[in-house]
Length: 277
Image (cartoon, rainbow, N blue to C red; front, side):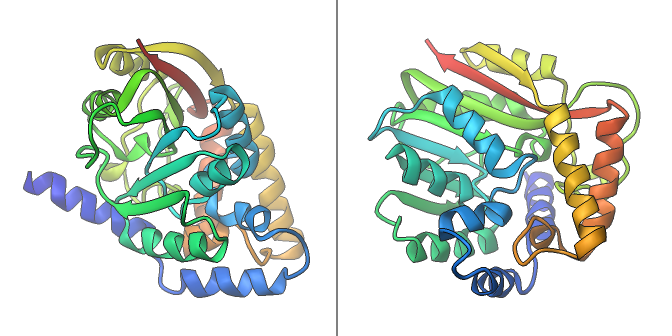
């Protein structure tokens, strides 16, 4: 238990950055009039490969009915939760390990007037504080890489889902051999990185009583995104809002290491949709 607590503290510290709230506020001010705040924020609060584009694909695969109750595990700054609430008319409970993310996410949710549909709280994926069978769907975007026991987490999620409920995963998974250089966006060192293969995810889902509906490898999309981001930063410098804000001063190194692992075919972002029978 103590080892798990220490690991969780280190993972939370990895994502905690001084001045992040102010940087996001400043970025929004610089982009004032350039578009709706919900869309502008997608560049920074959708902290996963592909950003808003990947979230749209995941939402389309889930096909959520209006009024559905959704659980977002590892909600981060709440970008996915707010997007789903605003575009699909669903109610979202988001849980994240990092208090600073939740605090910033709550402020952004109020700012966008979505606090009647989106609730974010600090919590662990391994100990979800909700009643069984209280959600129509669950999402988990770029979270499993920080979780060693995915089977236990999936079992907990399965308990939270109503019969027929769907679970959408969008994680970085190991698809080939080779080492990953650190730091990367989800971890500063190997001890807090728990990459697993798609086969391991499928096994963990089956063990939890969840039937795999579909799998999609999004490696090419991710490569295109990161190459464009890296080139834009080299040519024009960082934009007012972007993932560099949540990756901190090591953003260039994290991006380079991530691109190298993608190009080598070592890892890829993979989307999986599963269902509770």
